[in-house]
Image (cartoon, rainbow, N blue to C red):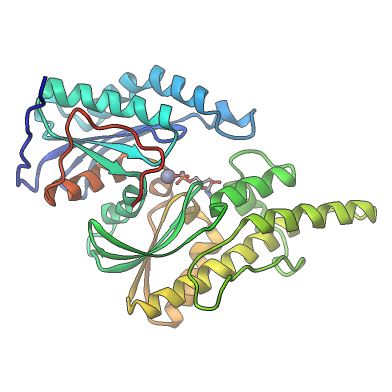
Length: 346
Ligand code: KG4
Ligand code: ZN
């Protein structure tokens, strides 16, 4: 059977039902237009994956499957919207865990088919950037984007809502991944980012000199895999000397080493791209040291900085709805052949 061609409807008030299941959060949101969030339900599986020290893909898929219909109902009920009022379905189609993505996509396709409304597949990172439009009414491209999450570390020149020029990216681990790995090395739980952030508040960021990896002169790329080894080497050498390890100092010194590089490269990139606005997105945007220091450094350069509120930093469907809106308005519509792409490029 051939799919119906669904034509974009140029209505800025349309109601979007959005679904996000790329990792370990089952999330459903209803938004009106590009900025008004009517509901944003996030069901986290962190407590389930905690005991394994990280996300177990097969378990994540099963829980998405168990939860998705319930979360859709909760999203609709909270928004006070009927299915007949939905104009558009937005869903994360990549990157992410393939089995997890497929659950959200299957639900989105079923809704699109039954309700006879268009479906738009959304790039997860584009969603993270869009989280900022939901809260900052005066924000619009162009700007310099810094995406820092568990799977991505990118510096982007955001030319328009759907047009990005990648200036730099990590060559190995993502920054959130480095936080999670170092947290495991020093015996904290999962996810490590928020735990290191909290512990670092009582530590000395100058106590231990961990390496800052800048790569080639003028490169906006990152490398974070070495710092985990540096932390491991430090702990082993202190143990051999029978020295007590001050975990708070390790957390604070590691965090500063990573963020010094991120902040310096972001400010340099903003200057090079001649942008007066920096927009931060992704789970690591919740980091208190990054929020404080980037604002300070950019402030000195006369650059505005936007972060999403803490709730919108980590994975949620409202940001996917906003990205779906902008894709749809630019004429991007998918059909029932929409598939998950775990390695989807921006
Ligand atoms: O964006 P996100 O929810 O999922 C991905 O798309 O990856 O980001 C999750 C990542 C995890 O690595 C987590 O440890 C990190 O964000 N994270 C933080 C903080 N809160 C979450 N990292 C540093 N400081 C935080 N406060
Ligand atoms: Zn994410």
